[in-house]
Length: 476
Image (tube, rainbow, N blue to C red):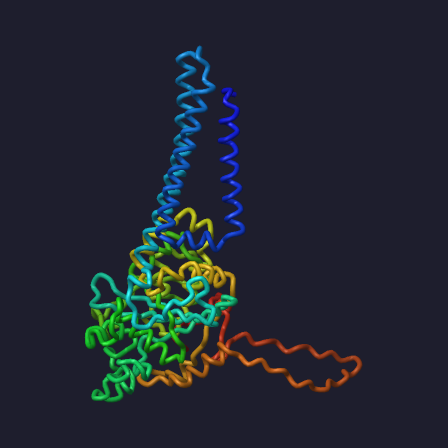
């Protein structure tokens, strides 16, 4: 309209070309997009590119207005035209600013939580040999999930939540294994310096075969670095490395990495996602303290309860207590609720929630997460996480009644057998039996299938987390 046809054609061609290139890369080069999303340097370049594109777009709007504005336009017309241009520029500047802030939030998150292999120290993680395909020789990736129970009024850090996620790197199928917080005699690998100090496991034999809270699994993270500083060598988190070694020896698995979440701030991530939906099968206490064990503040009754009901939408505060509440309930029931919380969190991480609340999620994650996963393998980790989201997640029942009726002397060897059987099931071909011809006039009805899992088996979390008002949470 302004007579600058060549310039108009050039701007239009560039605009359409950028859109087509963006669509092509997004649809056909997902690996490259994922690599960009976890590279601080490329994220900085992307931020600059977003700002430049926004500025160019605004220039096109202003320049176009000058070209097509009539010279004889009245004052009112010029004012109206300027207002329209101003609104258009504002409409461009707002999403451009939000996009740049989101990219910078991602860059800040990656740089704060995930350190490169050369800039971080670990006594237990495997060395990266192939960053593009780190699972080439790793059929199963074992990730230790730690819930740190630190916060106001608490002394030290206790890992009340210890879960191993064993992930099939080909399919994404994941098995969750919960470790009880009050396990004693946690073993260490024979080649570990801690095995020399605790050859019979993490406990004090001089005190006799009694409950020793300072030697529970949940006290290991805090006590071992205090009692034996530097025993594992150079590491950024000696407590996490100690728990990784103990979990590896106890379960018979090689634990590759850990991911630690501060439970006191866990609710921030849940709130940023808009809450989670869970089935509450029995009353879950909010607060409460038995007044026994390390870190206690004395006996205290719960301040309230989360009442039973199906498909309850919980905000961060109530989701935290759904996962943590244990006053009057058994440890296995709390472990199951923790697994169901993780399951609900994965299901709640929809693209819509991530896009609309990503800056809040990134800010909360930066303050709450700690890990030894190196930056170099983050693209592969994201691809694996996408597989996990759409794959099957199961729980491996370690048979509490048989293998750890109390925490004093768990049968770790028996647990290892259950885990290996669940992770590596042996396919058997049933022996064919001759079938009898049914008598005329008779019909044999199939017997109903029992859905209740037997101890020592894997159970799909969709079933384990289903609504069942007959559960009590007390183990009875």
